[in-house]
Length: 367
Image 1: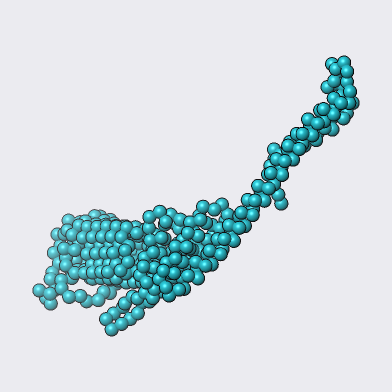
Image 2: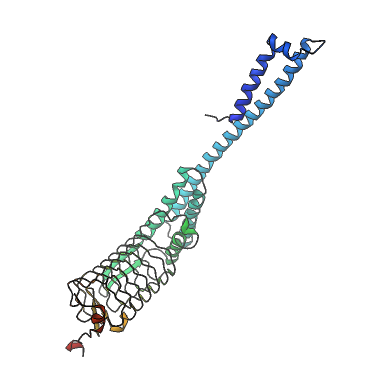
């Protein structure tokens, strides 16, 4: 149905009423009461003026109709162009040629960019579709295998393709397009990529492989790292508030100055992890059985941490350490207060000063 501007329709009605009134005897007498010579030619003159108005309004209406039709035609054409470009770009992702893959990735992102600027809901739907396809590309081309040397992660497509997707979805201005969409990168292999200061808030990374990855200063609030392989990962000064890290492998991880307030670390493996200056207010540590490691150890919240000085400056105010084996833990350099939960531990009922004064014995086999 063609939309006619309300003012055009109203004008036609008004002109029609005027024409009808001009032909009535009473109106004619009123209009020409002071005229000495009154003729039909005067009426024709008035009629001509009114007719001119009708023609002008008709032209305006026709122009309005053409504009409306053109807008609809442009919308249909744009939708068709977007559909065709989306299809062509998606097919490029299956290529074995690196240049073709990259062309497909950037073409899909451009489709999402243009869709974000559209007023059409059907076109805006491409934003989520594009993100899902790009995340799926990473997942499907990631392989986590068990070898004689342990768990390893491999990528079936070039690293540059993975990096391009990560940068487009989660870095700089690009990520604002996809900010309201939950990304799924579970079981993805992302180690070796440039991830410093990346925005991965609330992203699903369950079971992902990021061994020795660099995420210094990354924004990871609410990220789901459960059961991920993060051995040797660099998370210095990263923002991990309320992150889910249950069962995660964080052996030898660098967590200096990391923000772990309210994070969930139940069952996480923290052997040799460096927590110096980490913010652990209200962190959920829980209990877990960790593997043995060589050297001097600390058993914190069910997790071994090599070398006591790694806890220096760690902020444990409000941390849940209940039912944890803490007989080898030195809290003298850690930050604790009355909110730190020691229920079910050797420190239950003790004051903060008493806990900080406690000097754990060194096991005979480690002397």
